[in-house]
Image 1 (cartoon, rainbow, N blue to C red):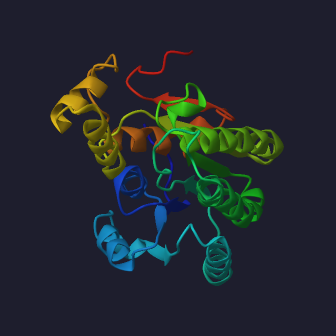
Image 2 (cartoon, helix red, strand yellow; image 1 turned 90 degrees about the horizontal axis):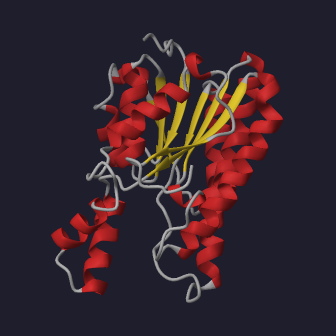
Length: 260
């Protein structure tokens, strides 16, 4: 299937590791010109070398805990270079823990990094998308928007807010050829999953291997996802072929989520 991403510009956040990095690699392989966003410049430089035709790609150094800085940098880049047909909103999730014991600043920090920064980026890229009558905004969230996950109180709360923001945006922008969709990863082999397993191991007294196996047993597929499997879903949603898919939450979780 030709996804027709040649000469499409993509902005990929959290792109030096995990799902973001895998998506940048996948989009570049399909011909898209990718701009990476992350806070570590050395990792950004290293990641670009992993993309097909590295000379076609660029990066922006930005920290999602500093929304004003992000807004300034993305605006400056667009004014000097080009707009974007594709936006992947993706950043590391909040720390785990029960919701009742969460501090107020944890909610505030997560809201800033996930919802405020998503909104800043959407506002920056949508004018160009409208001009092109083509836009794809894809948000990496969590299956917790369908089924809250134990021990991830702040994350469950903020992910739900992002999902509703996204659905509202999809309703407003669909008339301009712009789709807005959410990809909901299940347990995926990333640094975040390693931290979650370690935390479960410490609390349960299990070894990390035992904790990992217990998590796998909750998944009908009996395994964790690879980041590339999420990236393929994102890449399809970014393409012309997915033009009539709008406003959805797509779990990529091996069947773990119990709801439809």
